[in-house]
Image 1 (cartoon, rainbow, N blue to C red):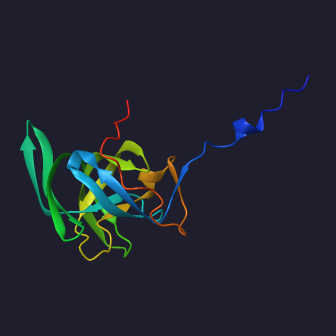
Image 2 (image 1 turned 60 degrees about the horizontal axis):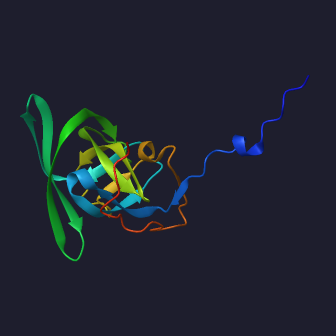
Length: 162
């Protein structure tokens, strides 16, 4: 007896939201309501431009304190703090290695809210203050480099996942 054929709808991966090469997103736990990001499938990790980075301990847990500068009709400076999730070597696109602090924080992108790891670095010479790497995108989104700003600016009230 031959096995039943698998229906074709079960063989197809679930539909994923398409993103362009640049998008608006939010980092609600950091108080960043909207920030422009470059979507980069060539980068493994996501990286956020920060200034005045310093570490401190609170309740025995290592934290970082830093400033995020959002460029909109003049600069908006946001003071942020977060527990450290890791510190490890990162190789940039020029092949230079440096040790960077990582935090785990919520991101709101394309109407979805989820936690991701972001490393903190000086990106002042870059066009975008935030680069979203493939580890953040994996399993959630497809990227079409011909598109740009396909998603509306994030809403303030996107709930955290259960």
